[in-house]
Length: 516
Image 1 (cartoon, one colour):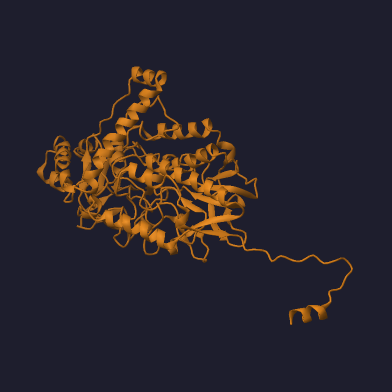
Image 2 (tube, rainbow, N blue to C red):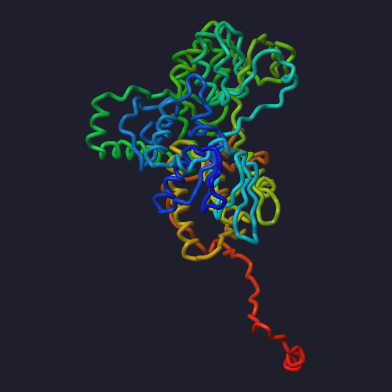
């Protein structure tokens, strides 16, 4: 459905990825059916719809990278590919009857707080509407980030970002440049290496790459999971528990990660025999400081004769010639950017206007911060799923999303208890206190002490992305809404007017005398 059918709804959810669909399911479970999901594209899936590049897959085990309320006993592999995850999200939308609530091709262009009516006015590419509550579930990996490279606009060949893959462009036999060595790049490189004529990889910083323990899930396993759902739960619980135990090393004892680095080096040494190339591929920072990547095929692909590694970032483009910061040149026909996303400067924040007339982006000019990763001061009844400091470095984001959905559910209950046209606006002291506690814990984590510059850090070098604790701790922190952390906002009172007696003129003399 593309047109907005309701002038006003109780809740408007932005985005139909894991966060948006999860919010929709939770609202229905809470008995709230007066909501819409605003989706800018023509299908659900979020980042798993947009990222369809060759080799795209998840680096979290399948049974953990799915909703606890929608287990899938038929995952075909321990680590699922993009198509399977997108199919799963389509299945969730169908199973929980969410499609009547979804408005496709409705990109939110602005959401503005209406203080007089205590609601949000929302403009979209498919129409306008108002809502009591807005849930932003656009996700941090939704808007590609393109670097500002001199000469890029004059490049005569093909250019695209990994998240906007051009499937109509034939890479066979082409001279291709891959810019970046993040999670997308290490999947793309081995996926296209065999078909391209040559592949030049521009590496600004080498990643730590661990072996990927991926395999087919047997028919017997899937049969067992279907017949005995408790086995699916047990599998998920085991995967979760292992990762919870790993958190201490990332957040409190980064020096214990040295053994993990040795395993990563061994993974490289098996495929890369040249000492010089090994040196170029060996990071000089603690493992975990940047996202740890998983692959069994990345290093073998780099060892192939049609692949060249440029251990320097792309600096300039002159016609078909790409020039690295160290002066290395490469002639190419196509450029693929694997340069990440707008994580700490999410574009949706520039479209949300709060109570004081400033945008969320302006409010976050000194860094993103939100109470319990969800709500920001000056933006009543506006909640972000996967907000500031809710990311993870070693486990499944679905766990964090479900914790925030618990918070959303209780938030809606509190509004019902308060009654009437009412909103909750987080106190600045509560947001500051929460953020200070998070940043204090962040000081000793590997993400802050590991000696790297990562996309976890904002322009000021502050880690506004990752949660410095276990998923259990976050779930406990978001189990209930503390109304004391909020200012209760109600609609302005309408002055009461005394009824007049029909046909009678007020006696102003007596009124004046009485007042005297």
